[in-house]
Image (cartoon, rainbow, N blue to C red):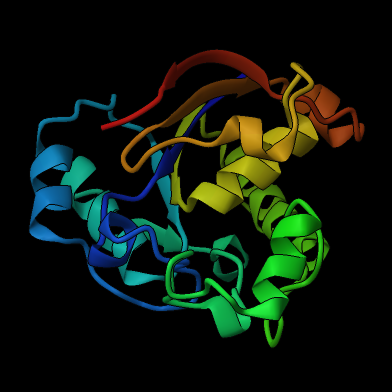
Length: 199
C-alpha cells in the first residue's frame, strides 16, 4: 500500500478575500505562514507539488529540507475572467451569474472548463503515483490546490461524494491509501484514512 497526504497550500491574501485564485501566482500571507508552522504532518519519503509559489512555499514550511518534485499538471484551474476577483466584485456580471446558475459546470470565460482542469489534474496525480510505484516510495505528500484535491477525490475516493463535498481549508487535506497492484491494473481507488479539514 502507498500512503499519500493530499494537502492544500496555506492561505494567501487572495484566499483571505475569497478571491478566485487559480493561475495568479501569489505567495502565502503572514497569517498563512503562521498557521502552517503550527501544523504537524508526518515526514514523507517524497514531496510532489504544483509549480505555483503558494504550494512550493507550503511544502518548504511543512517539510523543511525535503526536496520537492514539481508536477505542472497539478496546478489549480485557470479561472479566466474571474481570476483574482471575488463574488462581490463579480456581482452583476452576466457571465458569472450564468456560471453560478450552472452549479459551476460552465467553462470559466477565457479560462478552463472543470472537465479540462480535472483531466489535467488527474494526469498530474497519475504521474505522482507512477513515480511512487517506480521508486518504491511507500508514503508521499502532494502539496496542491483545493480544486486539485477535489478533482482527485471526486474521481478516485472509495466514498462517493460530489466535487464540492471534498472542499478543504488552507493547510488541510486528506490522508489516503492506494493498492499499487490494483492501481497498475487500472482499478484506481483511494481509501480515505483521515482528514485534516483546516489549518
